[in-house]
Length: 183
Image (cartoon, rainbow, N blue to C red; front, side, top):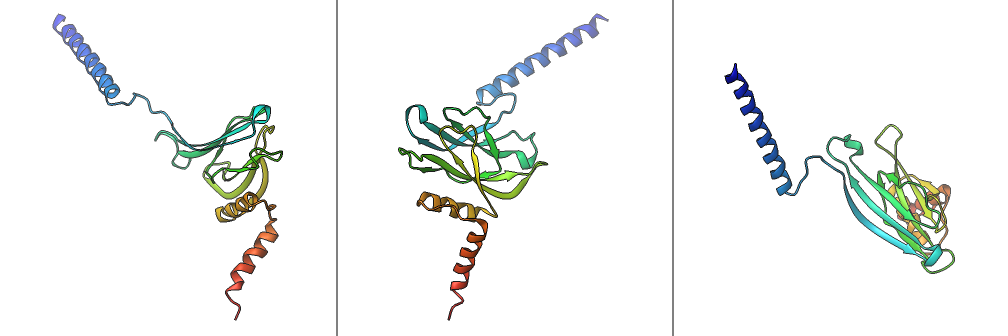
């Protein structure tokens, strides 16, 4: 009987040493025992100063492999305004941040983002958002069909032009496409 107990004790001791050395090896190689998400800062925009200052950060988050494939990578927009109390917003894809009038009265940060579907995956709908210094969350300005149209609308805003409605944008696109058909 004592031979069996000595065998179990020996096995337990060897197992404990193996686990300790495996953990030490993982630590030595720069990893950790449990997977964690990776956060990569992509862009930062700052407008204003003092009480009306607005800091906006765009980050890409990659979750561990255990997550669903459609939700493993997402983008989030974090902002620190005077009244910003909302949690960061998560999007399937995000354009670059566009600063408008950084030192003036109409200062804002604009961006376009692709929405997630409620059940998972991407909805394919792009929205143009505006963040002002005293906003509690981004204001939805316009829904567009694709990223190209969202980037075009952001370029209009950056140039000081107003956003186009969906009908005006379709008419402008058709006019450009039909210009090549003229004799």
